[in-house]
Image (tube, rainbow, N blue to C red; front, top):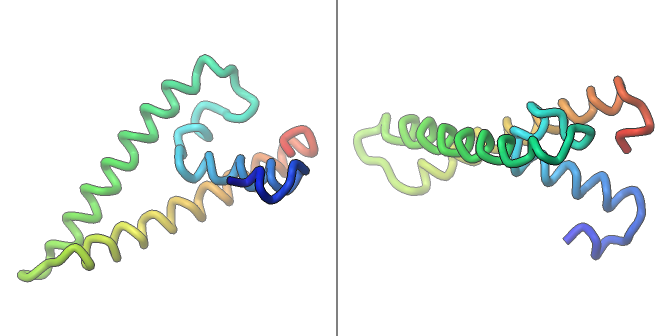
Length: 103
């Protein structure tokens, strides 16, 4: 999807950010600089992470006696935004530490 924006640096940065938000485990293994053989482990960690986020959102949603899917999705969205902000901050720190080679 980011390739529709163009083939320049901005689409690469947006694609990298989207990938790290979708799979936060990539930051744990050192993507995008790490060896690609560690990516399956990072993706497995990310799947486990999102399952845990879903469980936490479900537990927070059922605190009320009458819970709905709306309550779940509100909690999940809040936790997902926190994850996205954390990934963006992590990428910004990595870019500052590594410099232009990251971007």
